[in-house]
Length: 372
Image (cartoon, rainbow, N blue to C red):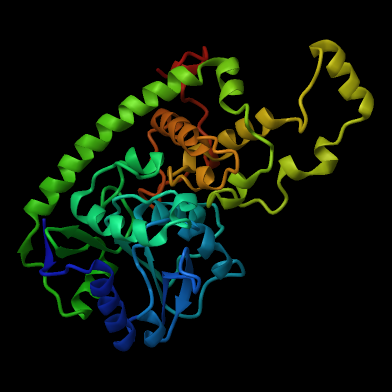
């Protein structure tokens, strides 16, 4: 693979900012959608920026994912396509979620381009806001060593942390204090060329390092998923896994894929029951737990969005009870996606299986046999 190596890029965010400022100055894009540190300093949010003076404050690769980029972008095209060209600077899982939302007709990607970044992972938001300076320093060294210690569990098992099977236009990788620029599409090639770059540098060292990281991640992933399978096997295992759930639905609200304005699980008309019904259930079981329908909610969410789950882990960040909900959704999503030979975000033209119908398929699962 060929691309462009920008050497001596010891401050990654600074170098990326320079590239973004150049794209705005040359009017390649009208605005950039990119993370920025909030004024109080302990978190980050996405800003739509047209002024390159404000662009100087952006942090393209923050150490936490306080909001999932696809979740933030949804409001921008809610009423239709944009009237200007936007460059979205996002992590691979955020871009994959954007592609899934476009298939679900929740975002419009016309005149939207993607700049993806190598992502070593992020820290827990709850930990970061207590000691932001400590984690900022730690993240700088993480970009060099790519060690999994201290990262969120979902990040430690992520196998799409670079340009693997991603529908981005231009990708920026990191290796040996250098920036690696790789155009991935025709549109990306045009952006790449407009910056004055040519694909003349050999990227073998970066690719070898990336493949070694992928091998290590796959080992951790397989071990983790095996443990999750054993832990959640059967209804009793699932009940025990979600025993701390208070039915707050925070996991649903921060998820980039859950988009329904009128959610069945929050519809009082659908879920309201007569008091006598609760008494009958109490008599049968000896007692029922309130709030009710916790398992119905989680199983329903798994059914609805497991095919499009990108394993970003924000659902787990949003859980006030520290339930590893992101890990179980990542595991279930992986199993279902393998069943349908589907990878969310891989190809914007590849239909989501849940939106397609085939009369003759999946006979091997007719007896509800286990997938493992």
